[in-house]
Image (cartoon, rainbow, N blue to C red; front, side):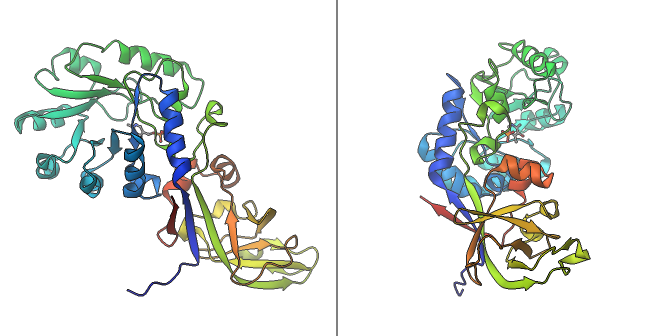
Length: 345
Ligand SMILES: *Cc1c(COP(=O)(O)O)cnc(C)c1O
């Protein structure tokens, strides 16, 4: 294939990724720190992320389904599949490149019928999303299972909610009631809570530069930044408008740059009139509606900006989330395929 340099790219910082994992590992205390690499490593590239974290010492990886696990298989890592096993997954599960996190009595029965083997189990402690119940466990549902990790998931970890302690206490009460070698409760935000780490933590968002709670704000580094090229420069005379639905009107003659980036790339319409970008150290504002493949910037402050120049978009996920109204998770996992992933290090 011809190598055509992309007009938009995602700059990825290996060092920041590894530092974030080390930070989360340290804050996890004596607990081991794993990594959620589902959804293609939150959009950054599961293989690239997992390889780097494994090299840094991360030993436990989490994906949602078996297709994601199969993609990681060549790396030979310990991978847990959060959605467990359907009948359709049993052949993959038998191949042994990952183990299921069993979530329902049906999944448990399926796993037992196939001969068992190492697995993880999710127990619901109040989120009412995935997991068997504590009552099922008391009734012996998990007896004879060979469980590596018993896990549960916090509903409100990024908030100061009384539900956190309720879930932690329900989970702690299960200690020693199953064959599980390890207990795991905390996602990124849960790591910042005191006393929630148990034996293994499962951060995702914060590895990738997301900041779910104030305690992590100063220690988590941005990992990804969007860069895109200017496609056209134009002068918009006072009184004229820019973009779809003519939502932005020039109050004075305005220098505008049209950029190779749009909502099809995960640069959401919520950034219309609210997003920010940089050329060098100059901050620039998005004006008008974000289109599918294009967005306009006011470049009055950067008169030398020209066709082909590169622009860097907001790298702070928390600010980008506030500006766009999208969660930091959505911003990461929606990063489109047209952004070529360029790792430094
Ligand atoms: C996605 C996920 C995580 C990671 O959560 P973050 O908030 O991204 O840190 C951990 N555990 C489970 C069960 C998950 O589904």
